[in-house]
Each structure stands twice: as structure tokens, then as C-alpha cells.
Image 1 (cartoon, rainbow, N blue to C red):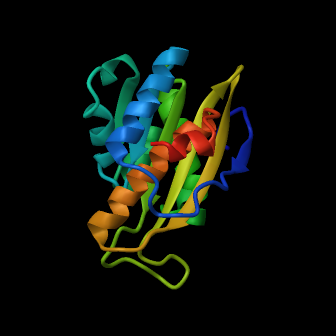
Image 2: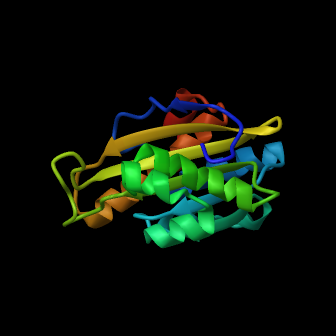
Length: 191
């Protein structure tokens, strides 16, 4: 991973498209980040700012939300988030390696963010291929750990139209950050 210290493991959490309202999850995430004194950063492609929008709709989000990037093009991913063009060329923009590099890029760009999440996918209605169908979204999660960065990746295929895929992706991303922070699934089900 392009100059990064840490480990990558797969995130095998939520196998469902529902699981809580985005604003309620963002509120829960804000409480957990505030409790730890942490800041969050985001990098979005297919969600186009919806994740940051859900986060900033929570009053007081400036206490725990550092920054958000919308990097829709491959050029933006490479320039703004330092995603190696080799990674994009080898795996495609919609891939776990690119999602992880995007989340890492947020932490490399920010001295204050402790944890980051990214989204890259095919929201539709066009753009799907046999190996990458419409509704496929890859997520990257990166968290500072000592002198390095620990990363997780997840891929999910969501059903529905473009708006439904993007909204489900926001919910999945928020739940994933909470899970990476150690919040148990039973606690998330209460949201």
C-alpha cells in the first residue's frame, strides 16, 4: 500500500441493505467520536457528498467531523487522495484496493482525523458489467493505530434505483465506521 504502515483485513459485517436511519447513525457515531476525542474524515465517489451531508446534518458535527472529499473522477482520486494510478489501472476505480487507498488518503492529508471512510461504486442505472454490476459499492475504512494505519475493506451489492443504492451506501458506511471503532452489532441494531 503506497507508503502506508498498517494492515488490511476484510470487513465481514452487515449482510443487509437496511439497518438504521442515516441521521440516527451519524448521531450515534458523533457521540462515540466525541467520547473518544476523535475526528472523522470521508472520501466519496458514488455517494457524491451524501455521507458528509448526513454527518453535517447532526448539530455539533464540527466537534467530530474534520473533512470530506468528493473525488468522483480517477484524476481526483489520484491528485486529492494520493491513490496510485497503478492501483486504479490494476483493479478499477470500483474496487476494495482503491476504496482502502481513498480512506488512507484522507488520513495522510489530515493530521487531525483519527478515522476515515470511503465509498466507490456503481450506483446506476448504467455502468454495470458482468463482474461489477449496478449496485456494487466498495468501502474503505482506515484508522490510526500507533505509528501506522489499520484498514478494512468491504464490498456490498445493493438493490434498488440510483437514489436507493446511494442512500444504502451511506447507512452501510456509517455502520462500518462504528463497527471499526468496536461498537457491537447489537448496539447498532438499537439505532
